[in-house]
Image (cartoon, rainbow over all chains, first blue to last red; front, side, top):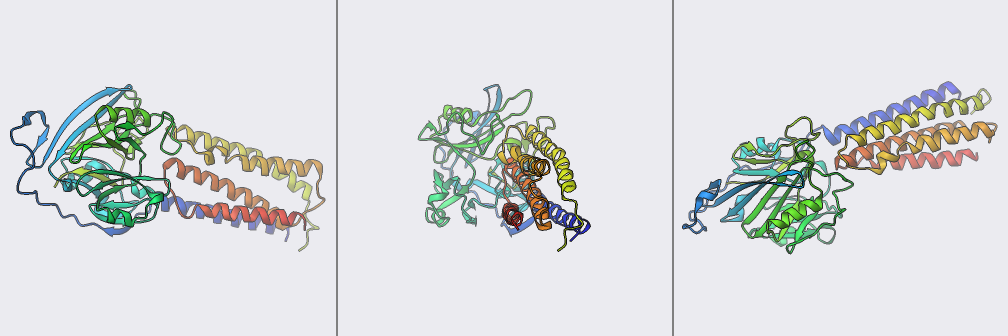
Length: 298
Length: 127
């Protein structure tokens, strides 16, 4: 084999390496794959309300017989934080959905598009399950992915509306169905547990060091929740560290809180209006398309 | 396999020259990518440049300067360079995936193939 043939072989190997890399990146970020269509049936509201009827309803930004939502805006840690306090008569109105009603990979929509399509009253981004190949995915009582992510502690919302933190490394996917899980999200970490901040000052999602936009859900008691989204990466809002986010959630009085996908994904939609300032780069203010969302609705 | 027509010292010098800008480009790519990653840090992205620097530039510089061998098998020439290229690209790709917070089942292939090529090149060195 001479130098010329060696060069040819090297060029051939380089071409294979480039093509392989191109395919890998397309497979990761571009090529949509549908694994399962999802039923889009909406629940019929229960005939009677569980709420006390003599309460003053004027404080709520939305209320009906089964759902009450109160919005607030805070300024903490040089960051705008949007809070939706939610009261439900049943956990079945705390729902989750997939982009284009499809469980898959690289199937994406903005939260506002998904919220509009589902008639959501209130919506936030979910755990962006589609960007990973592992981590349990259980939505509206149906288990879609049972591949374990041993690094992840899930948020499980039970059928009665309570929150349970479930480390995947200790629990096979069958545990979710055995415990009657209504929703399971694989992101985290848990921010507040038993009313105490559960993250350290230097804890972060993977190797993220900077303050970021955040999305989280907290529970005061079953059927009483806080949906929280913070801005970040902009001149107006620095963003929160996980610890700051945990402290803020704790200040709301939640007993448990869980961190969802954040950064450019963080979005809060109320009655088809985006309330926060979603941005990936701090320059262009636009919603990121994601694979799933969590919402309050029928 | 005949190697009599190959000027190995010339090849070693050429490879040594090639790997310095290759290391700098890799370092620059990693630095720029990290700059725009909103503080998400990946060791794979940051240290990818070490492959072309250590196993490219420094290795071939040493081979060239010290004339460690009068000649070496063509198999070594191929597998050593292919190993460096594969591991460098593998680290960069793993860095991209890590910074985005995603995974791909194909990414381990870089490391499997890269290490296999490194083992082959080490064995071929002593042929």
